[in-house]
Length: 254
Image (cartoon, rainbow, N blue to C red; front, side, top):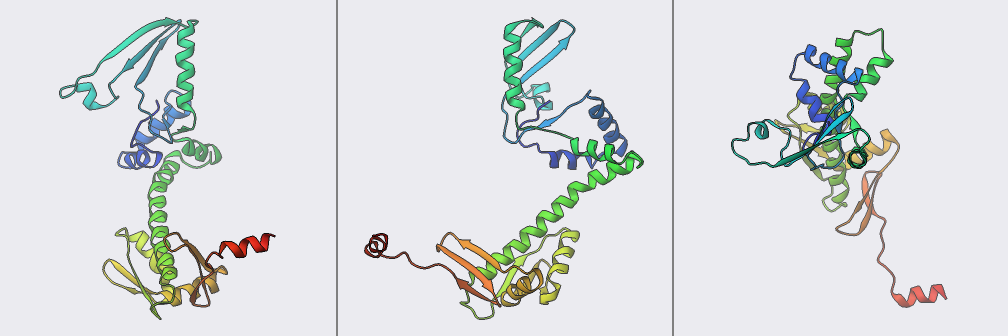
């Protein structure tokens, strides 16, 4: 199965996290045996194409209906479908299967990372590995929220461009306790002020902290002002210069 719009490996995994481990384990066994294969595309696939097969015969179904509960009940929508039964050596079947392979390009196998985890750790209990895999979705979300908050602080620290002396940067912090704790721990050296849902950071102290601790000064391209901004030694410098006049450029080229 190739899933359609709105479904990603992450939200599929998060949905499974609400199920019993036994349900996920049974599903993993089917994936491992090849009986179940769910592919997640990088872009929306709008096609509704179905294959039903038995030895010597394949039924190809083309429908306007999604494979959903709404379409199955069909109480509030109308759908149209046709099908054709074809032998294995039929040239039109070969064409449709070729088209299906085009749909498959760029898709990733759902649970493939779990299969890798199971193969690489055969001595570890499968339920334990499944638990680790399910928590991975939560860990990714925490990392995403953490990076988003830190990136916002970095951007605002640079874009003040020294116009306010000692600028104070204020950002919303995530509700998730783990993400909140990670942000507070990272910013602890610059003594932030933390309120219920905000964190206040001295922009100058933050710029100096990043440079001294991580060894790389902050830099950003501000597309709106056409500037390259460098945060170094606690201050912000613009590395951009105005374009020279045409006559000067022509003279230099000559």
